[in-house]
Image 1 (cartoon, rainbow, N blue to C red):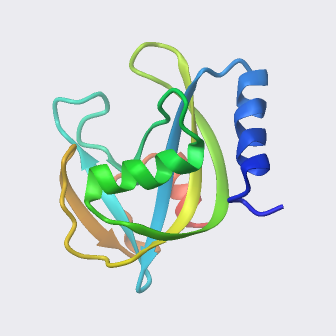
Image 2: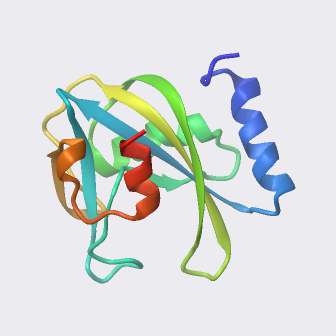
Length: 144
């Protein structure tokens, strides 16, 4: 079963729901020419100033994979050309005090530039050896 199959993605959601997790976030680990794309949260946002990978909430009626494509395009202006793998998930406490599960997929983009930010105040392409200030969970995704 491939990571892009509806059955695989439905299984991810079912496992999270069985664990009592109601908030889903879809994220893309985008690698281009040996560097990874990071975006920085606006200073006045929850976890402001933290660097992260493009990610966002899975909307009602939307699949996790559809959210990866949509959120990447909305946050960066980049178009994913291919989802190349599932890297795993991590759970975190969200701004409302609940638990959110972030599902992380490796992806390639059609073009790496221009990056057009709509929800973040900066971006950078960084090699795994020179990561910006990211959470330990994101660091583990990059160094797998």
